[in-house]
Length: 524
Ligand code: HEM
Image (cartoon, rainbow, N blue to C red; front, side, top):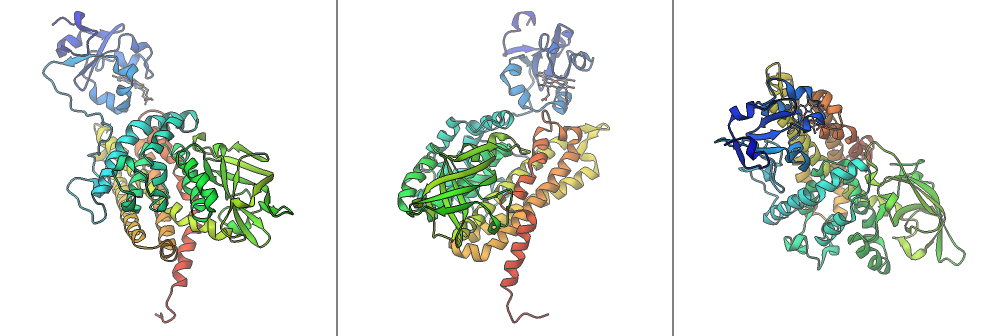
């Protein structure tokens, strides 16, 4: 077959000898995993430069190994580059498989054991698996591309993605099991509302974080996950009837506005005030809030304010006197992190959440679930790093051998794997306890466990991030290319350790709870 006559068809078949003839500037072909690429025109635009392509071991040659040591697979999936393929090599079959949306990874430890072929779990049933399968495909196809784009350009999550999530009732499921799911069709009916439990919620959260974009992860209505429960659990019926459907359908947005420049984890030290008008019909709110996730695009702010006898939780609607401005943090502005000012904001007293002066309880009652969600997320995102590292050490060659042949690299991997497996196992145990306990029992018995497990997870995650950067070297500190997920992870991993309570505070909380429960009879 003449190579001249078939250059426009991807189905054309060539011999290696034919490809080898195209080995110079302006007439340059290469073979990557049995696929033939015509780089004649592209070579001048190649981000890695023209010279590297003219090397005698590259031009007209087989360059699978060198290509995959320098580029991620996704390069070849981009339409602009996929177009460069002009055919395949005669009688040869490709060996490298591009991931298909919805796929389970076959890289060891890339999935939790319950999703790994040949392993068992006492916790996950058919409906958890069915939800996982549907979510994986949904995330890969609909959320992932938007996540990558928004993390980069800083724009908030696309409304079309939020609408698609609302259609499957994903926003509602993210609030966990409960009455709010009654009558809803969850993920096209895969799970019945009455059977939805915390393991389903874990599946949902862990699939969502696979997008590998930390700012977007929070921008994907993280504010709702923490800001709506106080309305749902403590708001009056009228307020719930209005706000719940608006928010769960992503027509309006809510956030939790607790932290201030003056006070963070020490909620009791907040300075924002709410004073009743003389007629007792309104609150007048004054103050500022800082680091408010989704605050920049929120319509509603669940806000603890100082009142005469303590703190009162109030849902404030955006309107006159409410201003938000973006805060630049180390992750993308797609999260909508804001500085919020309330300047004589008039709020109907009907927006009070729970009893007056008992706002501390309203806010604190939320924290265990929030921390548990973050624990789910941290467990899954560090697993992504393990997968990236295992692939890299296997394909990267140094000193003529794969990187994994270095004992020091294997040692790092051993630590990473041990940590991620421990975190997931502990998480599953805690989650099982949650499925058996009332909300109150969870507060009494699990606040400490969740606090410890989250702290352990985020410590593990930071160690894993640091080790991953060492494994990837310069690529681990580069925003594009092979190490782009590692760079992003390393830059943003600390968010999990700060949001929802800093590590030291959480550890302290857990020990205090344990000491409270010490039997008076105990002695050495
Ligand atoms: C279909 C063929 C190819 C395409 C579409 C392509 C595309 C790209 C792209 C998009 C980048 C930017 C890297 C990134 O940030 O992801 C890049 C970098 C690079 N490419 Fe290629 N490339 C091809 C083939 C090759 C081959 C055969 C070599 C062999 C030496 C090569 C060597 C390099 C080098 C050295 C870099 C710089 C890597 C770095 O900064 O770490 N490329 N290429």
